[in-house]
Amino acid sequence: MTPRRCILAVLAAVCILLLPCSHGAPVSPTGPQLLLCQSHERCGDQFYDPRQDCCYDDAVVPLGRTQKCGNCTFRVCFEQCCPWLVNRPRESFVVKVKGHSCYSAPSSDDRVCSRTCWSPKTIS
Image (tube, rainbow, N blue to C red):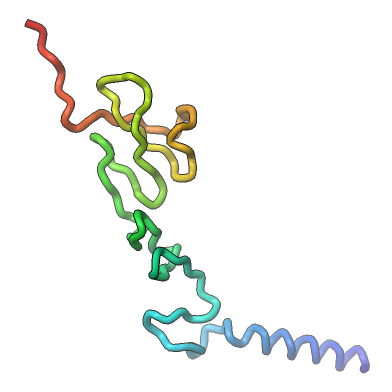
């Protein structure tokens, strides 16, 4: 095989392999089925696009979803609410970056949150 034919054969093989990933007509049905070459993750029995959603407590939720943690609000896709283990009556929770252990030493990224139902004692 001459070098020219070899190059053409390699280019043809590359084109055939990349054809299913082209952004032309879908190669599989749309809807709940997956399209080839799209990045998807699994959450329980559902698939989701990690660029738009995340899996939180076995449910698919949007990336912007927030939830209360004491008197703080945390982003469920990027942070986690951990119980505060140090004996401090006014501080009962800490928000940590997801992936860090709740039991790891405090870091500058952590946010300490007080209880929502905490009320100061009055001295008579």
